[in-house]
Amino acid sequence: MLQPVVLAHKSLADYTHIVGRDLIEEIRELAEPLKGRRVVHLSATAFGGGVSEILYTLVPLMRDVGLEVEWQVIYGREEFFNSTKLMHNALQGNPQDLTEEQWHVWRSYNEMNARELSRGWDVCVVHDPQPAALPSLAPEKARAWIWRCHIDISTPNPQTLEQLLPYIQRYPASLFHVQGYVPDGMNGGVNIVPPAIDPLTPKNMALSHDDAVYVCRQFGIDVNRPMICQVSRFDPWKDPLGVIDAYRIVKQSRPDVQLALVGSMASDDPEGWDFYNSTLAHAAGDEDIHILNNFNNVGAIEVNAFQSLADVVVQKSTREGFGLTVSEALWKGRPFIGGDVGGIPLQVTDGVTGYLVRSVGDCAARCLAIIEDPSLGSSLGRQGKEHVRANFLTPRYLRDYLRIFSEVL
Ligand code: UDP
Image 1 (tube, rainbow, N blue to C red):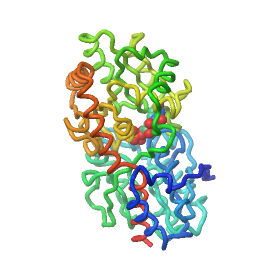
Image 2: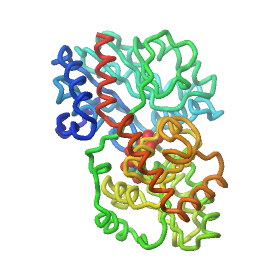
Image 3: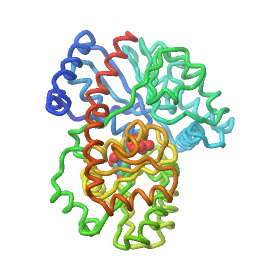
């Protein structure tokens, strides 16, 4: 019932020229005693959003250094994903908690998945709250359990967290992006580990200017006019409506500006389509607002092209676990403006590697300043790229996981 995800092969050696020999050697030393260990990652979806983005890279690299690693997607139906989306929103601060019935749905799907999970794992890494109850229900299926939290739970709905907490307290080890996300009452084993992006995937590999132009033109972008871009799921926390409002302010001074909202739909996100439609309605037929999604053939290369070509990349989130899109944009050396929330300040030093904003007005003012002064943009972009190289590329993330595996085993 749990679906194994089929993965491409990746080789750690290919990353040496990007992150340096020292880190690669450190990884190989850490991996040596872990060779042959059986690890399974469990997540709610293999499609859309940051978790799947990460696992498509991390799991092949864990295999490459000698571990026996699988990634399996838990079984769920609409009623389950309705409950887990509500839980996700509540943990990020939405006042609406799950009903008794919805908690029951969550638990019973966890029971089904706990029964179906095979035995004999050395480590089971559970991603996010959807499958979080598994170690409480079938502790015998893995020697060690790790919970990886990908969301911002710094200001949760207290009732929701209270219900979830007993399940996550059971894990001998957990990973959070920043200290501020760690809930009170964790029993230890807490690790602060931000995620990372893969510089060698089609989404992040170096794309020539001509190729980026070629791709963006196909989607109706006039490459001779300035473009603001946000890449994100259609989700209220990503604030695409605020991005449109900021664009409208910029447009008053720069009538030539265009906006691209590139968004994917995730299979575990039943609200996505409704919010996509609200975003379309908010754009009100403006021909300079391009709203694209993965059902219009916008895949990794297209995301790369938009992020590489944009005059300004924004991520105007009001909550953001980490924001892989931030590192993706910085890695392409683009000037970046992000909401001052969650994992974004970790990646952006205000005024040095980009700008942090708290309002539509600030966002518009910074966009305009960058569009009016391209040299400002290039200096921000250069520093942003080096910050990502030093901190947010996959080999560093792999090293951190291997250290934790060594500790729990
Ligand atoms: N993404 C994509 N196509 C889209 C929108 C998003 O491939 O149209 C990717 C994006 O490039 C990033 C991931 O989805 O790699 C989103 O991760 P992030 O951490 O930014 O946010 P999450 O969706 O996990 O909240």
